Length: 257
Image (cartoon, rainbow, N blue to C red):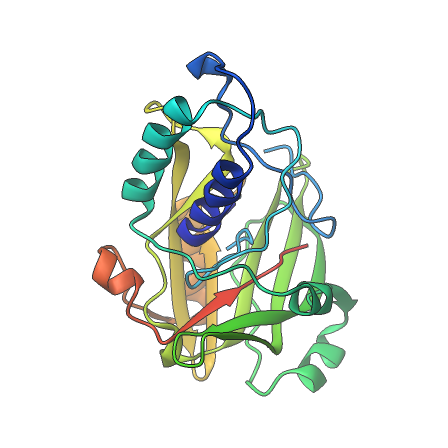
């Protein structure tokens, strides 16, 4: 699952690399490879689900066809309008290299972060396994126009009895990031309009912890709401307009295992 910033960044990189002859419009695939640390899910905050506040990602394109500008430009314009987002420049290699997911215990996770961890509760009954990953966040400042490596975010990753998987992401609440997006867009799924499929994104607070999740075929909206209610989390207002999506003074990049 990718946020509006990730999708826009991907297409900016693709357009920059155009050098092939005309190809049929049907060959324009809205797909790109995930980072090595994020294996294919077979099926979305989460970096996916980046996720999650608005995220900007360093992109590695693979198997994405090179197509003529006359075909890509109109499609890219539609994508930009859909996302309502202008991404920051790509982060330097040093920031990307630092964003390595680390499998940790809950006790270790508590020693790595500065917020009080409230683990997800009220999970679907068919959950059969849980893993916790800690991953440094890439942070872009709109004031200094520079990337830095931020503190870790946590990913609570679950597997269901039928093989489906889903994640909840947690980090320290930061008002400088602006409101989290109401929707994330999946580059590996195409909607009826031929553009990346939209999924609703949810975020809430428990004290100084912000948690988020995104609905998809593996995790229903009602199941997310059940977790939030069981945690007694306070819903966060979600961004829907261009102004709201650009309201923060920082942009975060997430890498979800």
